[in-house]
Amino acid sequence: MVQEILRNLTGVIISQDTLAEVIGTTYDGSDHDGINTSFAWFNNNYDYNLDVEWKNFSDLGWDGINDILESNNQDCGIHELYRDQYGHYTNFDEIYGDTIDVHNSLGDYCSSGCYCGYTENRSKSEARSYISGISQKSVIVVTRR
Image 1: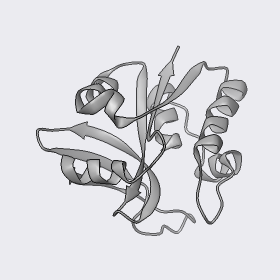
Image 2: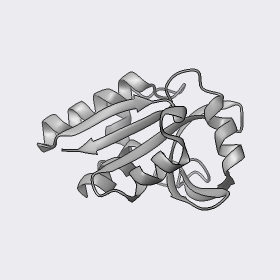
Image 3: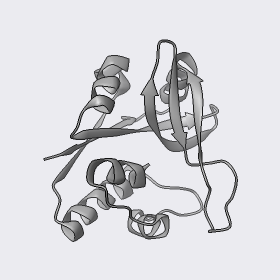
Image 4: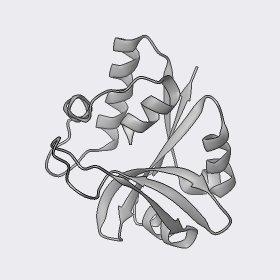
């Protein structure tokens, strides 16, 4: 999720290995604090000013998420209870009438030592169910200043 947000807002691609190290990702995954750290690290090392704010989905709704996705200086990521079982971070790509395209970093394991990922089309109700499974603020909004 972080890699995609950085690429979308700055054009800079940081390897997954580097980001995992900066975030402190373990076998058990990543957390908000580590993700916040990665954006501070990026700002410091690449001379950017990316602001990070975590919000509840209810603060934004689908229209707010769509406005972020269509903006030139913002992007967002989602912390969800994927398949109603696993904490996971994803990126919404496009919102349609009743569905959304989600960039999911899971999928097949690649020879490069990470998951290849894929784009998944989900119903809004399924996506909302996954988001509702997280008890903390689940939408990260990143703004390039």
